[in-house]
Each structure stands twice: as structure tokens, then as C-alpha cells.
Length: 635
Image (cartoon, rainbow, N blue to C red; front, side, top):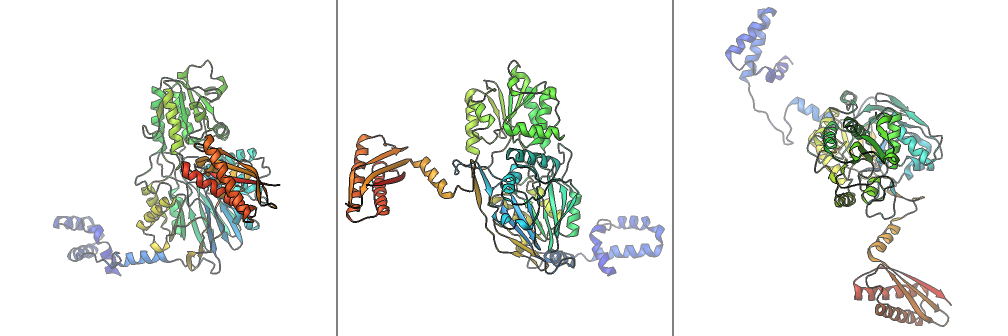
């Protein structure tokens, strides 16, 4: 063993033994410890210098040393004397693994369930008429009696937006655990939905909460909103670390850093499964600090001639604080417009997360008479939403705010995938008016709140999980994060790229894929929740893309004949107002109905014949296939 220790020390002492002069210096520095000890240490250096062996590689590409072998084995070892050999922890993602949004994960162990986040997602162009998209939480409702609590990592919509709908469907009160600002934003949502008597429990980073057989430790992470936390869940079956959304900002606006000490401590305890934010896994660099945005905003505002309009996410309190600071520093008043922006500004000021005096805030209705160069307007609409404040300003439809040539508009956000066209439309409308528009392509007016690849690897290296599951991202993000985990030493067989509704089962034996549960998406369409199906959306898309045609005919099934001539109407069809085409369609459809009736056709077959004949003629004449509805009146 003594020989092994001397060899292990060799690299550290090899530089000191490179020359004879260095060896003499080493002997002199240790002379006070006795000649015998000095000789022993000197001989150990000589021994090291004489035995310089080239490292040997195994077939797996791992250095053939005892230390490396032990590390690789430890990564694969799941068994622990602290685990209950009969316990099973099921990790069930219900949302967040197919898009940036609607995050929701259930943890089930020994008849106890915890729900982590309950978010939503906004619709894209393929969802006409849809207001919001929720994860399908049927599994949660089916196991409502086992639900011990809901933990929320932070206050963004993609982590809190489903809560009002979920609580309306639950038949029991379940405690919701979150930080102060997150709870404040949740309370605002509940007030809109008229939800009362919700049990809201404030937690702080460092707190520990026991929920059934599971214990949750909360730790601070830096994100684009104050009060963000990650979770360390300990259960009889094993331990899971969920980072939540995070970045490693070393100059944060509020002074809150991601808690490296907590991550290291959890790694020492043992992390059987790590779940981590994958949004920026394809970004090979470190994510810039939020403070860099403040510098750009201050410079743009100081140089602006007219009014400055800044669109950002209403929950980005850090960004709002920097906008307020830059406005006040340049002698400008701050105007807040947009329902969610006004609500979140009020909540953040009331809870102490946004600092600006009443004298520096003015109401949008009090703008008249104030010179444009003395105003900064914070508004919603960074994603090009058609009813947002910025879109209405660009279209000249806002009640109190008009935009003029020479005004400056800053879009301080990155378009969520699917919103790029909507944002471009708003930018073009502003440019036509003569506004000077800034977005991230022109200046650093936005940075992400999510960690880049190098930051993700740092956290993986600190935690050293036995197994890894990337979360919060589209398929490309999840797979990119999986490659990062593999690069940092997580065995390939212990990396799980899952889909919503899949499950992982953690036990004393290890981790494996379990049975899936019902999952999917739920559409919110006005006051309707879950009633809109994909078939309805397909019909809406067909109507919008191809138009609509209707056929009305009076038939006598007793006489097997058509009464009079059918009526054909067309809407949104090129050539639909052509008289001769309409007459041809009436003739073709009428003959088709008569033939079907003469063959004793029933109502269903007659409708089909009429529809097919109309579609065939329209395709021949216009190369269009609209939606066709056939109404038969039996006489």
C-alpha cells in the first residue's frame, strides 16, 4: 500500500524531481524533519522518475487504472443499505417533453403522490380558435386521493398556468408549495378564476417539506424570474434531483446564485436520477448574464429621441427592474400597459421584488401632455400576440398610446418556437410607421434564462448522478442534453429520453422503464376546457385553408325522387360567385342524387354521393377540395 501511495503522488511531485538542483532544494526544505525521513522521501522521488510508463487503455477507452475502474463501477451501482428493498418510486412526466411549455411531472411512491409544476402552453398556427393548451392530467385526477402536495419551481406560465384548471377538477384541497413571488402570481391567477380557499404554503430555499413517504428539499437557482428553486426528492426507493429552470449567472440582478453547495451536498448524499432543464442544450456557450441586457437597454434609452416602448414577458421581473432603473436614470417616467404586465407589476412591487417609486410611475390615461422624450412604456406583446398591447399599438388600435415616426421600440424577448411569423408581422407594422425597432439581432436586448451546454455539464459534473433524464424541451433539446450527460460520464444505458406519459421506476435494484399512463393535451377554447378535439381543429383548418360549400336538397325516399332542384352555396372558394359554375354544380349534384335515390339509397349514401360529386367537379374546375356539408330535407 505504501508503494501505491508513492506512485499515486508521482504526478504531483514529478516536476520537482526533473533536475538534480530541484532534488537538492527538496532535501533542504525537509531537513528539519530528520535525515532518515528526508532520505526516504528523496528515494521515493527517484523511484517515480525511473518508472515512467505510458498509460494503458482498455477496449472501452477507459484508462486501465484501479481508480478509474472504481469510478465507472460506482456510477452504475444503485443499491444502498438505506433503501427499502420493496419500495418503488415512479417518475411520470405528463408534460414538458415535447415542447417548451406545459411542464408537469408526477412522483408516486408507496401510495403517496407529489406533483411537480402545472404549466400550460400557448397555441400556434395549427390551433385556430384555441386560447391555451394544457397537459392531460387525467392520471392526477384518477389518483387524487394519493396527492399529498403540489410543488412549483417558479412563477412562469409554463409552470403555473394549469393550476386553476386542475384545482377546479380536484375534489379536495391540496397544499401548493412555492416561494413568495410565485405564490403571489398564483394568487392573481386564482382571483381571475374565482378560486377561493386554496391552501398556499410559502417555502424558502433551504426548507425541507415531508409529503407522505417523500421528503423535498428546496434549493435556490438563478433564472429569469425571482424565487426560482430546484428540488431534491428523497424517497424509500431512491433520490431524485430536479433542477427546475436555471442558469449559472455569476452577476445576477437580485444577487441570488444557483446554489452550488447544495448541488454538491446532494451529490454526496447520492442522486439516483437527475432531471434537468434542456432548453439551451444546443447552445454550446455559457448563457450571458442578465446584467448585460441592462447595459444595452440603458444605452438605447439614453440615445432615444422620442418615446421608448419595450415589450417583454410580463413575468420577467428582473428585466422590468432594469427597464425602470434605466428610465429613471434618464429622467423618464414609466408607463405600464397590458393586463398581465399591470397585474404582475403590482404584485412584484407589493412583495418587494420590483423597486420604483410612485412618482416615477404614471397611468397610460395620463400620457397626454407629457413630452415623448420623457416616457418609457413597458407592455406585453413580445410574442406577437394579436390582442397584446404592442400589437394593438402597432395597428393603431390602442386606446391611449399612439406610435409616431422616430419612436423607439425594443422587443426584449426571443420568439417561442412557432411565434416567429407573428413577431415579424408586428415588427414590419412598426417599421412602416417609422419606428426604430430593436430586437436581439440588432442589440443585446435579451438573454435567455436557461443554462447553455457548458453550464449544464458543470452541474452534471458536480452532481454525478447515477441516471439522467432530460426534461423541459423539444425532442432535439432532450437528445442534445442526453449527449452532454454521456460526455460527463453518465453511462449510456442509464440515460433516458422519455415522452409524456412514459414512466421510470426507481427501486433498490436500479432504474427501469415502467408502464405508461394516459397523456396528451387539453385545449382551452373560450369557456370550454377539453371539449375541443383534433377533429374540430382539422375542420377549422380546412375551413380556413380551402373554404366551405353546402348542399341543401328536398328528397322523397318513398317515391325515390328529388323534389325540385338542390341549392348549392360556396364561401371562401375561388370562383364560387361564378354563375355558370354554380349552375353546373346544381345540375351535377341533382343528377347524382337522383341516381342514388333510384337505387334505393338511404340518407347516408345519398349524402355521400352528393358530396363526392360536388368535390369531383370543384377539383376538375378549380383544383380545390373545400369542406362540403350536405343537408337533406325529407318530404
